[in-house]
Image (tube, rainbow, N blue to C red):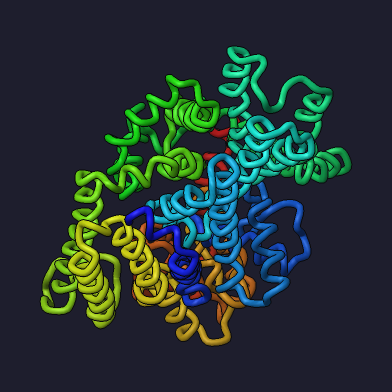
Length: 571
């Protein structure tokens, strides 16, 4: 994109409208899908239905893996809108729009409006940003809060002093911490700023003042949004379950998860791979950006020192933990977009940069064309085989293929029309097309299978007005039951679930059914009566009529196993 193209207010507002429209595309057209969305919506729905908002539940059990802040936001959004398919996605969308605005405003204040426009578009085109904006996971809301905190802290330190903004930055970091434990990360930006300030004591900006004493109290006040009511509940309620919940969330799911993670183990260089792939096409510019950044760091420009120093600290923080997931480093991306924005106008004049962006769009188009053509033309092709593995209706595959083919053709038109001269604009419009197709086409088409609604519809048709219980279930299955099915615990061992299920079925075997993961089926069931009800999310599910369960056998078999397991655990 030539620099002159962003100077026109009309072209900028048109691009901005397309960006917002693509992020909005598909809102309300799908239901929650694994891995994370169903458990958050399930907890939020139970808050609304039971009026118990302090502690999130996953079925009958307390959900201690994450604080409830994100689920509060989803539940509150539903209370306003009354529509779950919109309410569960809206917090991420609003957080993404807030992040874009904060990125624009910070860039405008640190540089100028033209740089701010480049910063917004640079952030938007990166694949991971758009993907998380359209997913109902905590991470996009976390990014909104961390960017708000960073925006306030940098305005105070680099453009201030403004002690109200320092207070806002500290408070936002506290709220971010009780949204997801790493919400305190913006405070690390004070380290590179302090190092620069120590070398340049007479420079303008925030210096000494009594207001710095507000930092810790206001951070604690932010965490008190949730920790305060939790603390009151712990003092007033001696329930061991509540004490165990607090211990697991405050210690195991924070310090232990960071220092001695029990899953998602990845090598130290894992995030370099994430940057190279999920931050496309922005990562293609790093060979030009890194030397330019280094020159500005050598000039001791405080804007680059703080932005890049903070991003490096975040990268090192997450790289030091053995447990790594690609979304962990997403809070870095807005800061890097701000740091890259002043350089983009010059870089986009370089032939190599233009070729990199244009080839990215062309390769993306060709890949989509290949997959779309395969889905439309080959009944036994790769697309159909992949759909069969996921129990997706073969009739859906051509519909998905048509959307992919349409994207590929449109992207090739962009390449042919805009060519090398406007490669930057081609990258932005390709992202607009990508997220529009994703929201309006791909996700709605695949939704019945990814959300498990298709298999749960079969269950409802089969049991009629009967009652449903669940053994070895997944969150999306329980979420898709209306009214909510009876469960016997999520983390509880299968033998214990079966013992409880047997007691529940024995009370009314003629009208009660069990929905069971195939490999968890009990030997106490009549094999001839077991119904293979379908597959969802690569799991095979079975339906068992209550009359086909020998409850005495369940009590004898699983009760003995559960008792033995419990004694072993205590030892």
